[in-house]
Image 1 (cartoon, rainbow, N blue to C red):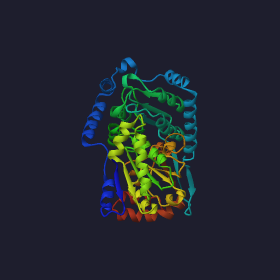
Image 2 (image 1 turned 45 degrees about the horizontal axis):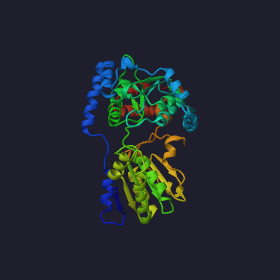
Image 3 (image 1 turned 90 degrees about the horizontal axis):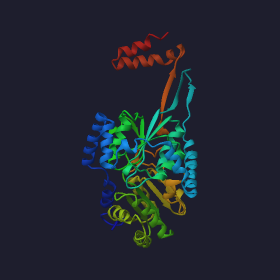
Image 4 (image 1 turned 30 degrees about the horizontal axis):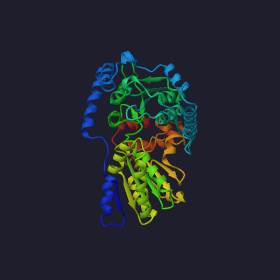
Length: 429
């Protein structure tokens, strides 16, 4: 059964702190395994990839083919039902429109001292995209990762994906065609992340790696940060729903289960000021669990990691919500903006009773690749900026260096760096 807490209880503070501090992520064994995989791929390259693929995915890359041919992605899109094709194209259009507004502007100004300074933005040369292919295949995640890179202007995007028995979900291939991905490799797991970072004879290295994966993939990205850029270290999915008693309990139950069904380690938490409503939601969850094809995963997640928290009023809930810094936050109330004004830490916020988190997973526009594990305290969801870097620049003439140079000389001398001081002093009038 899910955890039940009441803010009026004497032990609430300690119990809630334990909930906030609970970790649901990779253990030391995963870390050790990944370290060994990365080391082997770096040393053996394609040979290691072929061996791991044969062991974990059950096929010979030399037989099934290392890369997906363009004809395969075209065929997948051509044979897709009109309903699904329209849905993917709507999602792609909305995601593109949202992310185009994120593109940063170059700056080039002259300040009061007559000194020119500014910054120029450029896309990275190459990005790697990891697309899961194990427990489930997510064409929506493919679009959410590729489109910001395309908008940023990345010239090469390399996709890797595990292929059990050499097969790829046709819906993923169709999404790849819509997104314009031309380089797709039939390799997955931590070994695929290593190949993107280090490069092999077949796979050229990239500058940034994004995309969700299992614990081994997440750990590989963590260990390789610095060799390449990464989007984030992603943990299990999570949702916090703040709801009053005016909601339909079945709707809220469905919202909670939309995250529970992802993985046994996912987390769904309800805050409400209405104990009777909380009981109705819990009953509705049980009713819905019996109808889900994903029942086994969702039930394990809900019972192990779910929580229902009763508060005196919803304003009391908001500081608690901030402490959780959840990936997804729903504010299912009449005036969500009033509560939203109190939110400082959340990956993405869904305002009002008619805005389920699930719509944001697909077609709304904002990115669904979001910080988990309380990382919304210091990080943001995937954006165009993850595929770009800023280069600052500076230009002084004689008047400019005469204006600010003496201060630089004084500071350099104070720091005991005479060559620094001389390089400026020699240019002063």
